[in-house]
Length: 91
Image 1: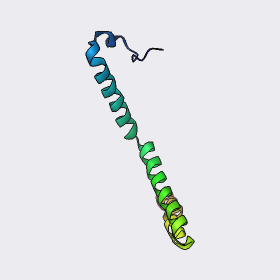
Image 2: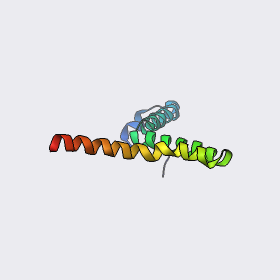
Image 3: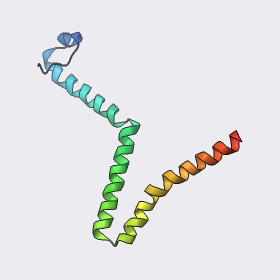
C-alpha cells in the first residue's frame, strides 16, 4: 500500500509540497477528532480518574470518597431533575 493519500488530486500536487500538505491534512483531521464531544468527555473522565487514583494512593480513603461523590451523585441529580420536570409538564 502506498503512503500517498487516496484521491486523484494528489497527482497534481508538486512532489516538494506533498509531504507538507499530507502533514497539514493529518493535523486538521486530528484537530477535528479532538474537538468531538465524545473525545472531550472521555478525556475529562480520564483526567478525573487519574486525580481520583492519585488521591486514593496518597491520601486517606475518606478524601477519595469525597472526590468520587460528584461523579456518582451528579448523574443521579440530573436524572431526578429530568424526572421532576417531566412529571410537572405531563401530569
